[in-house]
Image (spheres, rainbow, N blue to C red):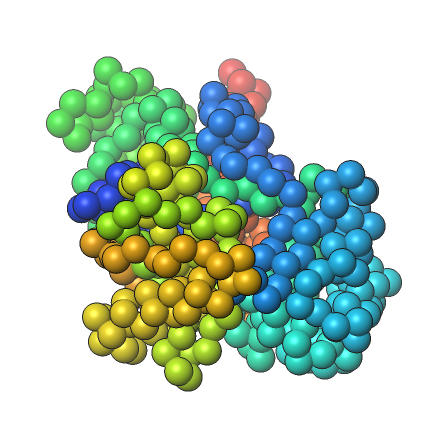
Length: 456
């Protein structure tokens, strides 16, 4: 997901105050899946109840114009619930439904490791119809990988389909946050650590410790809050004779570099043996995500909290999903807010801002007006906020070399959704990377302690 636009807890994505809106605005409308097991476990470990913070519903994809609806029965096990949802879907012909089921069967037979390089090649090889591509596969690919079909990695897309559609029925559930991202878990995690906000790290270098020295640091999360005063860390003892890391003059046993790849390369380039890793970090390319939040002058509720929009960037209709922010936040009906999301928003990013906003609002009006349920007219828009995160995610292309958490240095560990998690740039990928980084740090600290005990 997108990177923070304002100071936050360093999470993938971010929250910022929005003028005229009922709550903070996230850099993107985040969507979780029931398959995000590590994310949900992390929330529970921090005292956050997913059932309270997230609106959970069975797999349901419906368009705002009423032309498409897929509802997977919650009473059927996987993958039968998806097959039943496809067979009963509104807006797909039998040829479209057979093609979609064929794709899932081919992926299952291959162990979800397709031979094709791109999603476009995979869809062609499995005989997908134009309608099912435009109605299902293209929207899902953009939402999950933020990368166009012709460029997106087929294996990463297959992983998303495997974990969300082909394991357990609950894994396909849609989990939409009812709070801003910081309240999901970053804030609770930060409260358990000593945080030093507003400090921009300038340098990282390796040092060999020779004993106790003044102004030493400790690994993040292991510093007592009473030891931090105006940015100073009291002297401590680092085991002598081992490599440590000096960060802006403070020495630490272990450092986790949890910043975007380009920033990580800038920090690590001066370290010995950094050339290969830094080249890998610099090789990532990035794609934008745009989010338009609107406040309406009168009461309004969407038929569903999340609905699809059919986009056509060539005609300025870029919206892909709309969320009923007012309903999700539990706002009174007379305080209506909606959020429109645009993945791979390169075309929109090149347009004049006011024109892009007006076109998105008109696209939404046209969709809702076409709904067969004769929905009420959308009230006038009183406030808007358009956030375009130009480097929201890495481009999930085939053969992309993604580094692991491990680095050439025992005291330096990488963390971020760009590391080799097996997932695209998602919240689950970020959490899994963070947990793997923490595990590596713990094992390195234990190794040093065991070596010190052996010497004594």
